[in-house]
Length: 451
Image (tube, rainbow, N blue to C red):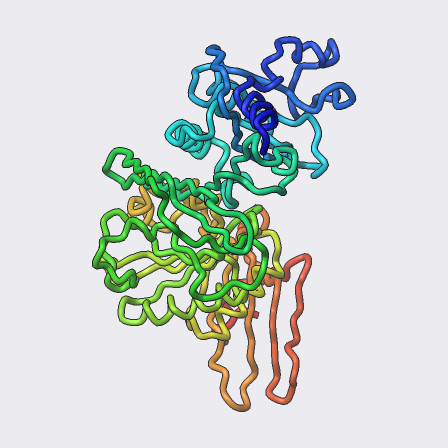
């Protein structure tokens, strides 16, 4: 590179970006309220801008790029503006007024110098801890940081090569793990290094470490593909004691509540709920191993967890589905559980909404979950949304029957059959029937079966 070109490049890097122009605000239509979801000034400007009170001159600017759903963009942008006004982010931010993705908006948060790793990481930590961010797509995919040296336009459009990447953070109850990776090389010999991380367990303050030189690591591809067993993620993995074997029957780590099995590529839940299994300590490890294999093989949902060692010798395994209103998917998971003999007794399905509201069978169960007492239910109302009665043992010459009931139907909180699988001994294919409306039944007939 000749000296003139190098001089021009350096000048471009140290010059403040054009967005500091105070006249940018005037580009919007006079009646525009500058709200991302409702701004219609895209013929004049594609962005709404905000800046901190202290106008810090950019040296080598870069930006963290978020992709926010339209239904959440206004409250997230409002929170970002408030953080900027308190100098808790970088010096400038912008949000797209319209995006080619349709229901998505791009949000760019600038820092003044991409080589100032502590400052870049400080902004990242603030973003990860935002109230509404973890519930959107940025909570389950890496966040990218692009610089003026990269193709920023490509980065905003979801392409290009970022300088920094932040993998999905672990923010679970009072525990946190936030990391920042640096892309060291580009091409077939690309390498990624850990340059900064924050860790906090349930009792400690933030522990932040910076690595120079970066620690070489491997980052799995985020391209959708079948999950492998050894690629399942435990979001509390880093909080186990060093000598813990991470088995449900023996784990007693005080900073760990659950042992998890997450797929690398996860589907965003809509109305999440879970089938609940209650194995005893003597067989929980075997059952949990089967659950993990089935999660990795896409035969259950894409998330499951298991409680650690319990004084009462009973564990809870939750097998999650993304939408409790999707009866076919809920039933599909139930059939897999039944046919793999993961629980031979009745199985109950509870929504996350009920869990968050403190709906439990007993006050003792509610207290273990952190509530003062269980939410009082009306007479006849059930804790679970779905119920599956015990299936008969399938042996030669026997008919296989798997049933799914919906609880709390109507003012009397009736129970109704919504799905049923029957397979006769001489039949090759399952006979599956879905009932809409549900077939209302009284609890038990003399035979002891739900029909």
